[in-house]
Amino acid sequence: AVAVAGPAGGGEAGGGEEKSEFDLILTAAGGSKLAVVKLVKELTGLGLKEAKEIVDGAPSPIKEGIPKDEAEALKTQLEEAGAEVELK
Image (tube, rainbow, N blue to C red):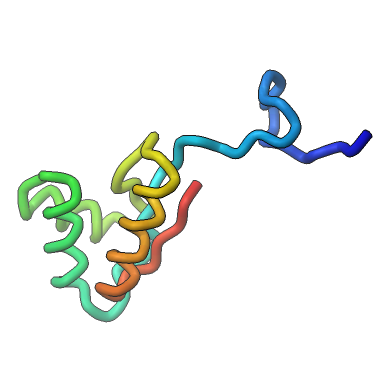
């Protein structure tokens, strides 16, 4: 038998299962803050003020509980705009 380290307190998840939902976390705006604010606004549907607050308050969640493929696509878009992003 092979032991697979899972999330702390995971309990019920089977050994080889991949996580199906991810949180997209903005860790830093990078050099192009305005471009990142515009992209966050576009991706979240928030107003400009709310999007700016998310970017200014980094690390901040942008989207939570999204599928892996969507999370990776959004991460790529944000990184291309200059942001530092992480999936959890």
